Length: 603
Image (cartoon, rainbow, N blue to C red; front, side, top):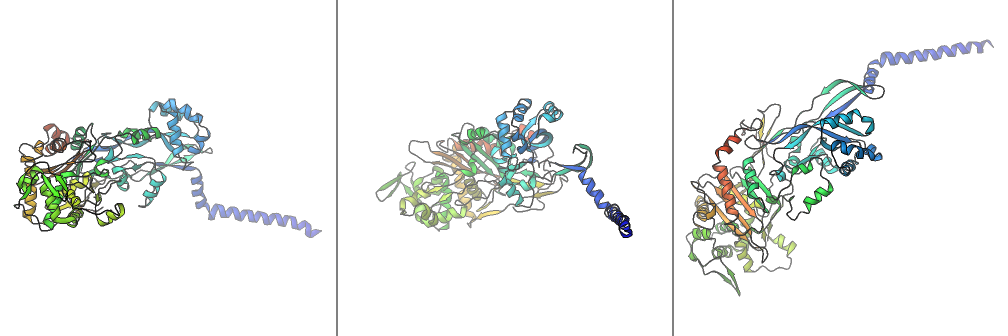
């Protein structure tokens, strides 16, 4: 009986001792760790989007900037349970409720993460949403630095656009060791230079009350803006090219032959980048996608057609490589050539004609003869050597390669085809089983301008640190093709191309006080249709600064359609009007005036 009476106070004492030791452990041994954990429970953090890197042209003129805008977001899982919220929100922000629902559904793959559904709400609308938060469950509004473009149409195919990441975007960005930002580049420069442009997001830490409502800011890690990308593009040249292409389907590509920098890359018809500001709807996308003019198609790198007589440059190189070329050796043109029972016509009856006059007058008979003497193998080799059958590697997505009748190509697409002599003759004048892109032909004429060397075309010129503008990394030129030929050969070829403008088929390209060379081309596609119009050229003759290709789908003769366009672009670049010089000297933001020859990198 006494033992049982003593057991009760002993048990109570033991329990109190355990409780004391436990409290001592928490308050002394674990005090610091628990204090930190308590702080975590009473704080929350919000990501601060990093301003995307700015994009400039070669003269320091701003092409793509950043400005604060009110962005309305929705938590997909929460909002889709209450779709009436979007009906109520739409008139407040001036948006289509169907489009808001579509954007909400686009983000369902991240059901509890806020996804942007509208950019550019007014300050008044943003205030009302914040004040009446309980009426809009799952909806939030924040001011964020958003991308804008100084010209929404002239640079559409080059820039791409910015919007929320899709699963493929996430995979792509994680591939270079980064986490995707709230907004990522899609297409064009925005996508290709994503790693440089995206920046590093910051975070704002705030205390919250028992209901998880923020009470005060307790810390902030500021976001770091993305690097600035300086392009080789000349804004004035690009805008002029787009004006000259208005109402046409075509492309203009201009390169610096000494480096491969892209000075201009215009594609028409184009589209308005503002359509992508709030994420393009399916109906808007389909309207552009199925437009007969194919506005989404980036023609400089994605269309390929027979190059016509511009390919006679390659035929000349083939004749040089096979040892047949002799500028003084005449060929006889009687209006064409006879191959078996087939007569292939020339543009005229040129009689006995040597190389300079044959190039100036674009004599088909002469160049078919060169091709026949070079044989199919020689023509294919020269074409491969100048890059006809491969992508140039320009820093843009969706580039296509050309078509060329190599053994592998013929086996894949024409397995039972027997190659007749006529096809070799047609190859010599840029017809037959042959297709090229405008950027490939621009690079071919750049090779001629540069004595047999051309470079990988690149829009990016340099990357600049936004926090220290003196830190500039130039994108190093990369040799793409090199063809061995004597200085006499290259001088002869270039001089013949000068004759094309001064006394031949490209008289419409003459520029007072500028001596330059070029070649016209008119490529047949279907009987009854106008020919495709081509022109390639380089200027000035003595020290080339620009190589250009102009292509117009079903435009007609190259000398009357493509050559005049090239003339205006070359003249603008080499002899710009005073007002253009003045505008280039007043960039929107500080120009890339630092030395761009330091710290080269290769992509």
